[in-house]
Image (cartoon, rainbow, N blue to C red):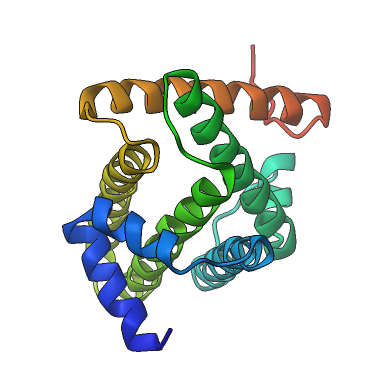
Length: 195
């Protein structure tokens, strides 16, 4: 696959996510290659976040901010979160009669993250050139991530109802957030809340 093919696939993903899912499956990537795509997505996202933090430092003294200030730690956390998300998409989807496989979910989660990395890079540039538009780009990225996750999950599992997939996604997000909060609390990295 050439670099221009990636651009075409990105456009296809935005226009017709279901067809993009078929194309991604058709690549027949090995399990190791899918994990490498996930690692690439986590690494690029963390590097861009680290670059933005260096360019626009935000003072913070809690444990969570200290952990997230390290690109290596942030990449590890993103990698873990995307893996958990792929697992949740697979398990919850199958619980409702879906046919998706974990390795396909892993690839789709990684691909959506790579698209968001492109938007993240644009946001860093906009923060330099036109700072007020950077917030708008954050909203666009958030909306796009929800749209793509719902559309690609629907295609992954062969579902027909977008509202049901959206409800499943919301439930899954709460479930994953709860699990991650418990893990964070176990390691003592949640920010302290004043009584």
